[in-house]
Structures are given as structure tokens and as C-alpha cells.
Image (cartoon, rainbow, N blue to C red):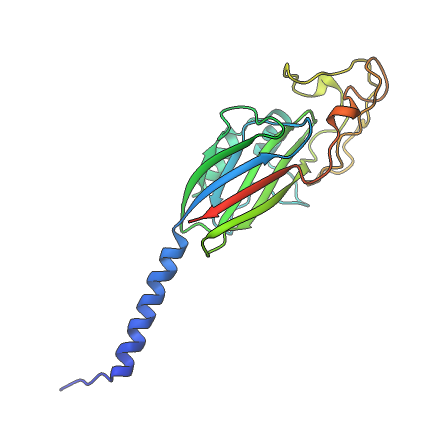
Length: 230
């Protein structure tokens, strides 16, 4: 039996095939990423940048922080979070700044996302009890170009914001006061939420906080991320 295929059918099939190929090509994104610390005197611990699928989250507002988020937000340890993301199929970039990201400084990196279409970022804020800069599942644009994203600070909800030196990492580039009585004594919101900022005070040997309010307060956003989709 002789089979006849109309020309219109051939063209339609060709267009469908071309569309599929283009779609696959768009998904295999090559990204250049720059994260700038946009604060006055808040420091970022090593950054974690992850490209992942839509069903993966490093953190989510309004939900309890994982043990991995807690370790990052309270002590700057991204190893557990990196392993968790990698095991979920994410492409992970660790510590693009090669250490602490100082105020006003940018960390840059490149990443090949394959067919992954979400981008997330985390790093602890210093000095805080459990504050971190975060980006949750930002949709990577399919169209080549340069995109700017402003990143907020989050509170992991895992530790009271007492703002006492004994409760926080004490790197040499942070100047703490002494004798604070504590801003908070208990956790008031145990879910991940937008950070209210350090309260601080100007009493170096007393008051409620060991954080100098003239140096270590901030307002959101705390970082600027520039993404170039090639």
C-alpha cells in the first residue's frame, strides 16, 4: 500500500521538531552571576548559589528552617546545605568570594544550569544571631540578557535575636560591645521570615545589645544580584 504525506504535514512536523530543539537549547542556560553586598557594615559568610528544579527549595518563607539552613544561618556553614542541594540534582557553586564578602564588594561566578530553571542563594549575615541573605527559587529567564535582582535578609527563626556577642560568631572584623542584657530572650517567630534587622544600641559596655546600632543596622534589600543569561 502506498502512503501519501501532504506537504503541509511535513512542514508542521518540521516546525514541531524545530520548536523542541529550540526549547531544549533555551533550557541549557549559561549564566554569569554577580552578587554585591549592598550594606554599610554587614558581612556575608561564604555564599551558596544553586541552580535547581522547581520542586527543590533551599528555604521557604513561612516554613520551619531545615537543620542545614540553621547551620548556615547561625554559623555560616554551607556544607550540609550544599550536599542537600547536590543530592537533589542541583548545580551548586560554593564560596565564589573565596571567603567573607565585605560590604560594597561583589562576588562573581559562572554556572551552566542544564535543564534546571530555578536559582537560589544563601549566606549568613554578620553580625546576627540567625540572619541570612536569601533568594528562593528565582525563575531563570529563558531570554538572553542581563537581569538585576534585589535580595532581602531573612531570619531563620531558629535562635532568639538577643544580639549578644556570646550567641554569635566573633570574627576579628566585627567590633562587639559588652554587658548587653539581650534584646530577645526567646524566639518570637520560629518560621523563616523577613529579618527585622539588628536593633543595637550605642552603649559599648551595657544596654540591651552588644551590637553598635550606628554600624550594624540595615534595611532591606541587603544584596544586588546581576544575572547575565547567555
